[in-house]
Length: 168
Ligand SMILES: C[S@@+](CC[C@H](N)C(=O)[O-])C[C@H]1O[C@@H](n2cnc3c(N)ncnc32)[C@H](O)[C@@H]1O
Image (cartoon, rainbow, N blue to C red; front, side, top):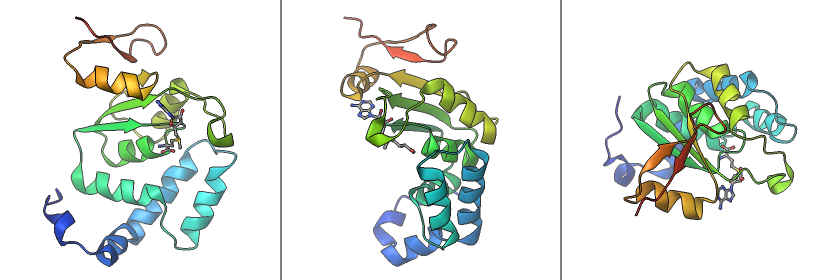
């Protein structure tokens, strides 16, 4: 079922919370977390929250992806791919674009990079191959959306990384 775009004007905070807290949705998110390789810092914390009945960011993402079935999903700041993987699990037809500069030790946790995220995606979805655009999003995003052409890089992800190149 596609979300009516007027939904956002009409829904109350309580209604939205009730929707994302549905048992099916929370169970789905927990199942995704359990299928991923455990993050030393966040996996246990996130699962503990969900088991207590609290919602977690991925509950919103999961519910939105289920309802909207997006054709495209673009994420800035992917890290291990918790959110991207959730979208892929809910909407396997979505084209996935991930922008990240893979800052080592970001916020005190490891940041294993695009190949790792590809493997995580394979754990939960047989959907489309992700495209990763590595670099500072302050530069890569404007390039991506500008008139500059995007060229497929063959360097780091077997041709699936997209390196935006501005051609003047
Ligand atoms: C909090 S993590 C993202 C978490 C992720 N959305 C998830 O679902 O788990 C933030 C990420 O943003 C990336 N990042 C921070 N500043 C950036 C920038 N200017 N350009 C590209 N990536 C950036 C970091 O490398 C890191 O991987």
